[in-house]
Length: 141
Image (cartoon, rainbow, N blue to C red):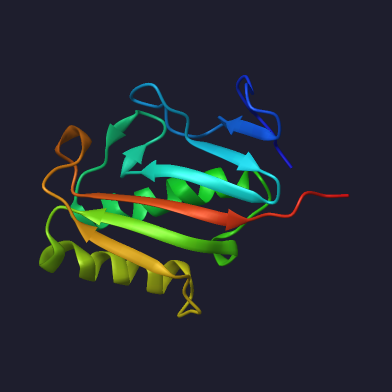
């Protein structure tokens, strides 16, 4: 298990920055671990190699989920260990079907974790989609 982390000012909380993750665009970290839970910050369709948004709505949604999965995997969790997801889209009618399609593929037809999807007026860098997740990843004894 890769516990790559920045400084930890709060006892029991680890801030994560695993190899292969995107570079944060501001004063935040891509994830944290508290006990047996991993919290992944909002991930968008950013290519971690270039730190630029990928082209195409469907590809961007899928990349956001892959970015989230990488952070979870760095702590020993898979998408099937998701406890809860929150998804933000800028156009519910246009982007919700793409989110559903990505989840159907990535979760291999289910079961699916609880999810809240919200339409928002705007996202960073004029993006269309963002997903954040909480994962169960028990610490090894």
